[in-house]
Length: 101
Image (cartoon, rainbow, N blue to C red; front, side, top):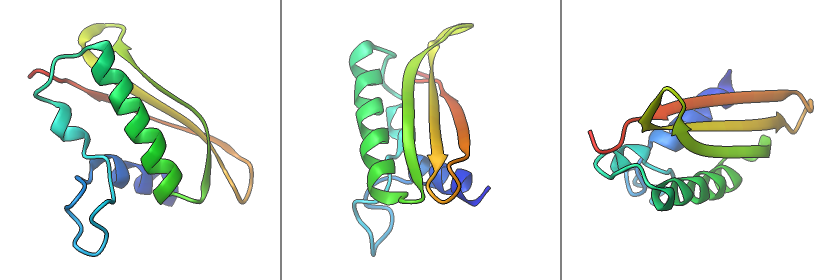
């Protein structure tokens, strides 16, 4: 649960928000005013992969998918599959954003 919470903190924290770690975080909420485009989804994907690789060393990323939510095309669905380094246990976390709102 600690890793899952850490991932959510990394995704929600805006770069520059933490004084002692100004590059920490993705700040997904900054994308809420942008339209749901392939370019935006690719940008989010790259930022998530980079941030998790940099700031959460307890995991090995297996997959990060950033797509339109099937039931709500204006929403972005982020699915992250990872394994815990210590145990190899496969975990998954997902969240949905509504850009352009």
